[in-house]
Length: 96
Image (cartoon, rainbow, N blue to C red):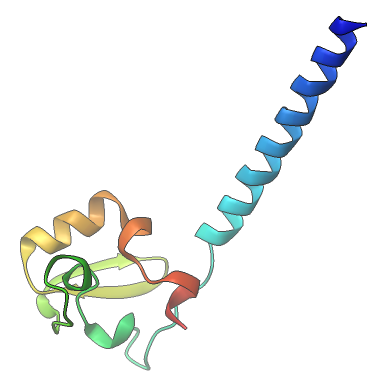
């Protein structure tokens, strides 16, 4: 009896984990809101909101294409931070 309960628990956990993975994959593929030029967040540096606690305009010199949008950054350091983990720094809900 204990063995069948354990199997049911393992199956339930497995189903929940698969569901969570499916949702996270769906969220990660949301389209990014862009301006007519294809810029995400109107060319502002998404890293600056975390590191500088303010908005900074990105530079054409430091750009990165991700999720069909062009992202601009104020520095090479910010660009590298975004490249290493864009999901952490990109705005939620595609920037809408």
